[in-house]
Length: 226
Image 1 (spheres, rainbow, N blue to C red):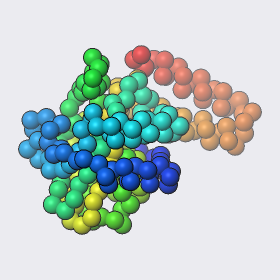
Image 2 (image 1 turned 90 degrees about the vertical axis):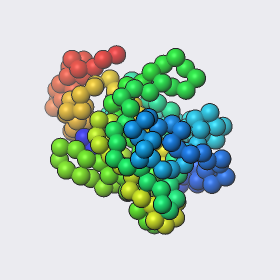
Image 3 (image 1 turned 120 degrees about the vertical axis):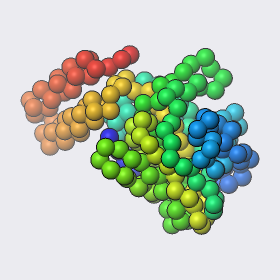
Image 4 (image 1 turned 180 degrees about the horizontal axis):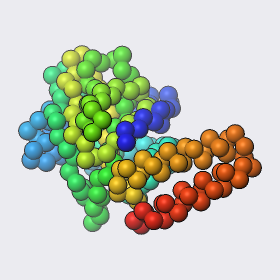
């Protein structure tokens, strides 16, 4: 499932992020890449221990907690702290698959990367290129969203970032270990969650909403790993 979630960050939060990132101390992004990814990765990143990265990462995490579609789409058990990347002309990230597990910096905790996320921070008119290109069984999807919007997709997907030819592309990327490992099951639960919300909005007292909710929670009970 490839899911676009609009307005995860509001205008004030985007401005805060861009102001901090414009003054940040960027490093070679290959330092955090695995052996295969490092061969195709050309970008800049903030070290995960950088105070700016930690401040903005906390801001993003608070925003995620208030996003019903993120909760419904990812069904998060653990979230790897956001990493911040910057691409300027000539930089790109070739086709790769993310590492299956990642250790949270400074902690003896590993996260299985079930769901990948890119939260766009730069306005799309401010740079050319830089599309996130995701390949799945339904074809190839090119994603370039408004600042503050986010895309979720299975971390098992082959994906890349197209070369930036003008301006600068900044984004936060992170991974979620889901309570439901299988993408097909997560997709079914997300659709069911949306249906429940729509029925409740149309008729808060509908018996159908109760039956749908029962189906949702019984499926989640069957599939969840907590």
